Length: 139
Image (cartoon, helix red, strand yellow):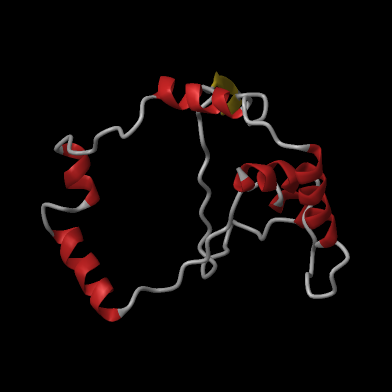
């Protein structure tokens, strides 16, 4: 993905700069899937563990799936609207380069990331890829 290309069935496709990948894994049915090794986990910006919804929320979800508000119905009716254009997102990303981060702040963020590697309460500390994410979160 870093090369902005993907290959499917030996055919290579170029992907735009704003292309994003969302990965899901069902922990109940691991057949054909395997837990990621630690060296690959730091390639993901975040991990969200989801629990089953409360009974009322699950009932509302079931009712929605059967009605005109189901995701399929919303998509086919064209009711999904862009909230931002690709060009606007590209401009916003370029604007990040104009943000000044003092060396003292950057050093502090690096120390926080490094401290996760020696803290006994952290099973596996953050890798070097965590520093840029830490910086983006701090901005």
